[in-house]
Image (tube, rainbow, N blue to C red; front, side):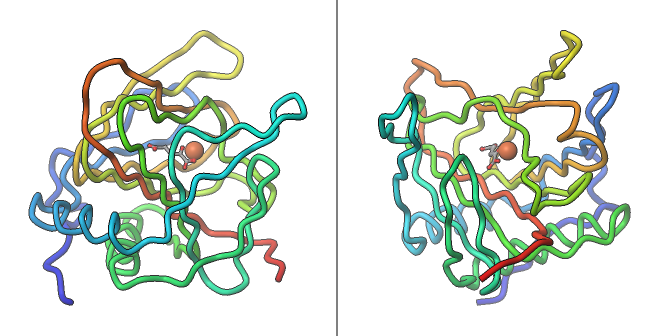
Length: 213
Ligand SMILES: O=C(O)CCC(=O)C(=O)O
Ligand SMILES: [Fe+2]
């Protein structure tokens, strides 16, 4: 399937840098057209092999509050919160969205991504606790492109030492690019909400370096 996908950094005039003193984060509100974002949301919901993993908390398995799916090149095994995930293959939808993210990065960092973590927040009770994407296989100062499809949710950055906090609502069809020292200085997360809201899919495209089989 061919998509008339993205707006380029040049014509995406509403893109802007977030005001973080020690981070490098750019927000592209309409990286995907509404039509393409709607289509990808439905395709990914139906075609990815979603699973609900458990992590061990004080010795007990606890289900994480969302569904996930890890995809990438064959050698992109990823360990995250003590979970080791072997990659599922790329799908056409994921590859199209990856191209879009690489085009948005081209103006600043020449990043090629080899993997993506998909998260499906089924409703307001699904969330992601504060963390940094600072696993060793991401290398120093990783570039991570985060795509939002579906319900807009507030994405909060919190500085690890100072009290600095910044919230960006991530909208349907948007791409957020985190680069530079963002991961070393800030944690980020998605809070639960009691509001009755719809589902949201987030894709974080990554480039893994120390790859194992
Ligand atoms: O859902 C989001 O916007 C954040 C996802 C995230 O932080 C991650 O996958 O590491
Ligand atoms: Fe993250």
